[in-house]
Image (cartoon, rainbow, N blue to C red; front, side, top):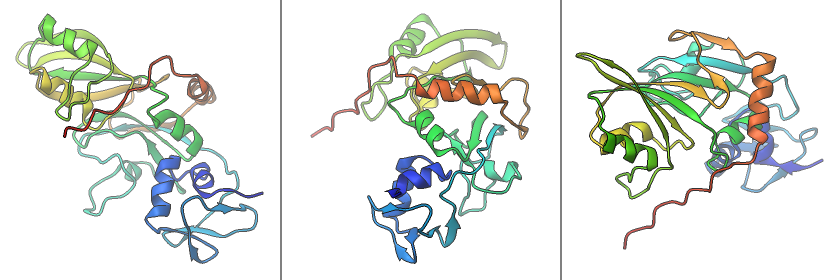
Length: 255
């Protein structure tokens, strides 16, 4: 039975459907020796599909779910042209594994690696708006006005107003800064750092400690583990729940 190519690639663990669409548009996917085109359908039992010249199995394989503590100065990608270390280098398991979401190069904390394309799509697509929690060390104690702006939404440099966030003030460390807990339901590039910078709070350290129901726990940098059956079940249940938030609209283009 034929299905859309990007859906099958996602199911095979190559990332979200949007990511797989990009692979097709870039001409990196071939079907039976011919460059694939957007919207193409294939039969997983009959057609031979390659990505970057490597054959991809489109039938269901065992799914892998890995929780990793990404250290600072490690990329949240599977490869890098400059040969910098990536999260994939830290998990010596064969096969296709892709990170769910991103963390900045200088940020650390929880990353989920999996070959489950459907779960990846549901945990990263903006419309699902699952919670992600960060512990953020800022350079000074925030005042009430700064906290209020962070909580109700910050207007970023490009004019986008962030969704309301949960912000809790934690320990104040003399000579080092103040720790905040910030819970977001969206994930724009460098969002936490830019939000804090816009209200005058320099970020000294940023660590993600939770993605939905999955927590970092007591893991240390570079440590990784397989998720338990219950953790996978909870993530999948969370991914099927409808969002309770109104969808965010992109900023209007200035003329």
